[in-house]
Image 1: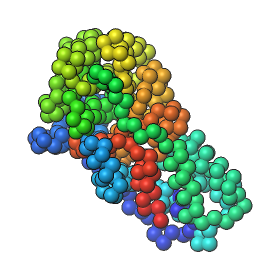
Image 2: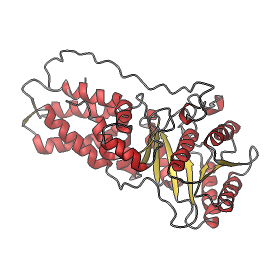
Image 3: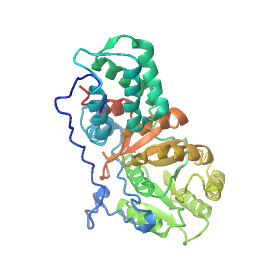
Image 4: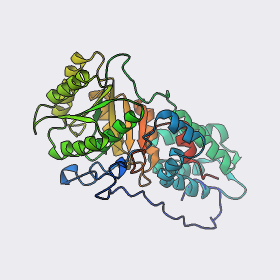
Length: 377
């Protein structure tokens, strides 16, 4: 049952077609110029799904924004990616309502709360929305469009954040660390972030500091070759901090604009790996004042509430400054972005939507909410 269904006695069509997920498997032998179509090279070491996430709009911010405002570009992709959540809201909320509306009582509030939690928005966000409806409308008969408008407004408030995709160094190179668990889409997101930066006219150097997995270094090497960017790597098992040091040194030597460093896929509970990350922070901070300027956490949108535990562990230990929400491809419930934003105040900077080079998009709260409720009528 969905949010729209709260207002009907019986939906005329109780069955809603299940949204199709965007395919994420990359065909071999793909066009070299089509970054997103390049084989990602996941192996058993990539732990099942590996880095199969395909990020969104690699176009410059200005172009992406123009596409968004015109209703094309990544808005259309986002609507497709959020179809699962949108359908859940649309059908379930409709079931709550009768033709003449619905009295806001405890039964209604409990049903609505359960529907909201199923979108992966979490208990806190669902409680906030439920409590506002109770506060504004208890003992009143309300219509579905009123409830949807309130939910939309509350979600928009939760997701609002400053429109700043990346913190760039005021002088000298910008250094970006990328962290996350294996299989979250980390390596692929790094490649697409590099592609996005190249679209901004930036010269990029990649550092393969995930020295514990040969497959990760090999995969990043494939991406670097296709992107036409330099890759600095070390021997298998080498000290990741030394690789990060060499990558930053090479960035300074070549006068590149940005250095993106891949770090070992780790769990937030692995203390020794978190200590290693702190060492990388110290080393590169001595080379470039203020580095790292960004520490981006890649989260798999399909992980649902498990993404919250990852965000909790990484937010303090890794000093995360932003999130790339990967694999938001129609198989995920987009509501997970709400508790991440609300609990940790870490901005979602990019979202991964599909399988092309242009599928890494700068996150925009208004566009996200509009896409989420695009068919909510």
